[in-house]
Image (cartoon, rainbow, N blue to C red; front, side):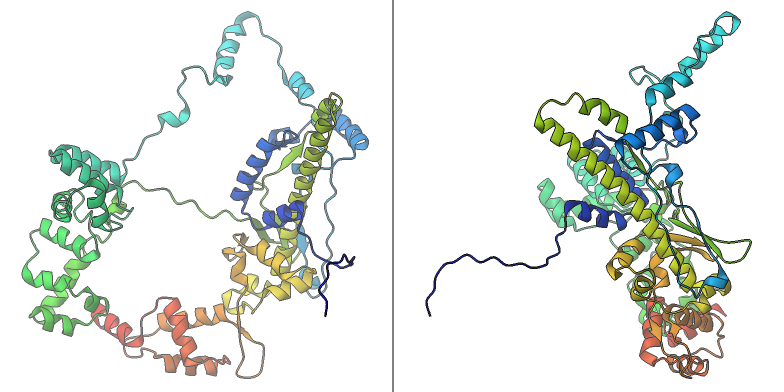
Length: 518
């Protein structure tokens, strides 16, 4: 066998991920906020792109005619607020039939801003109203060079936990080394008031011993609110009890065995602390009156509610109406008049190639946004069709569903459906749910009927436990018997796994809790 070098020509098929295709795939899995940030970057990079202005949705007839004529000449496309996909109405009578979808037609985006500004310009006023006009223009001006006070500067400022601790540090601690150490310790405090990390790192950073850091920490732990700057729950509760002069040796042993309190094992606690059960009950009540997270008393970031991407509303004529949340759906425009103006001034081949590439990129981005909106609508519509019983009757009728079921119904790949449903929320008459919530595994039926959704089974287990009494606490085996009698084929280990996922204690601990509560 002789090894020689030679040239061969072969023909084959290969999938090439172009940058445009990668961009379209990336847009599918972005939330509306992430999409807005991404579009901000694209608008900065591409001079032919600009954000769609909702106030320009109502234009005069002359602008509309100019836009149509420019569209015929340039043959470019764009996605405007008026071009967003129309709501899809899902009829209950047609739920078993295949759905037909049509793509939204593209329209050119060539808003003439000079004419808009000229049309909106108001004539100068004279006479008695001139002074009022000048005052009004002063308030309307957007000159950021002037020393004006913005509305955000008039809002009240809520003191944060770290600011509160630093204020006390500047008053109560005199030694400069202790102040430096205290500043670093306060920087490690989380929103609940606990120290995150190890003190050894602070000692190495400041250049002092661990004993000096702990001595400074003992001073800081006397700050307000009591219990702040603790390293664990026991230390936090001990500081609050010390403030109330209730930290005796028995209580100290009690705090060292909080795991027994979590299990409501009062007999073991009484034996460990050397007191009777009645004293343990009083001590437990005193512990529960303390604040395990003292840092939450101060200003924290306001939690923003979940904003749904899709709305599912009941249709008055029957069925469901599915539409996108246009209030949070960002969009961009392709400024074709600007392209027509500067393309005629381009002289070199390099300038022409750059403008052509920017125009192609802008139009591809707009088409990708249009495709993203329609794909989300298609997936949401199929979800509403598949889970129609859940929308009407509740979680007990949630059916098992996977990505393949949706992908085959709308003739898309499973990866596309997975990207569309990632980090997206859907508003239904039953509440706001992540789109991934509707995809659950199946549990077979013991009677050979339709399979049950794992989410509905977990809900059933929680209902059984919530309705149990002290005399009839259900064990995992008993829950299995009840579910099997209801037609749900489930194993004991599966019940235990679901119970642990929902953070429900075992039957022994639940019996102890009910006995203490009674």
